Length: 126
Image 1 (cartoon, rainbow, N blue to C red):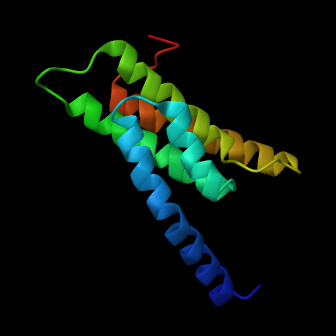
Image 2: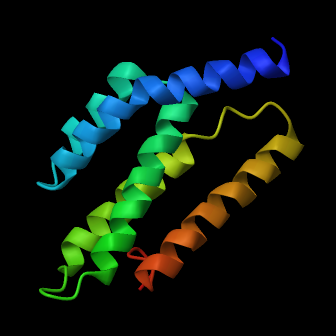
């Protein structure tokens, strides 16, 4: 597949996800995690869909941490953290070499670190 064809493929996939992401946003307003995830996976069960879900949860976590009146409760924040971390880690492909394994482990650690920076602590290691 040429570079242009691949870019077109990714753009089409992103366009296909748009309505599902909008629905997922509505579902997350009620913390309906499983339904939100299913809405996206139904139209894109690829790694790109997983990346989109992780990004959605990270964005929600950022919003919820910033929420002041009333402040978001800890359990809800941690649920969003855990979902964001799960999907961020899930989105890495299966490793085939030791170098890939190291790269992906470093990437997962970076993803978790970014979430810890947003939340201010790691829920499993307070």
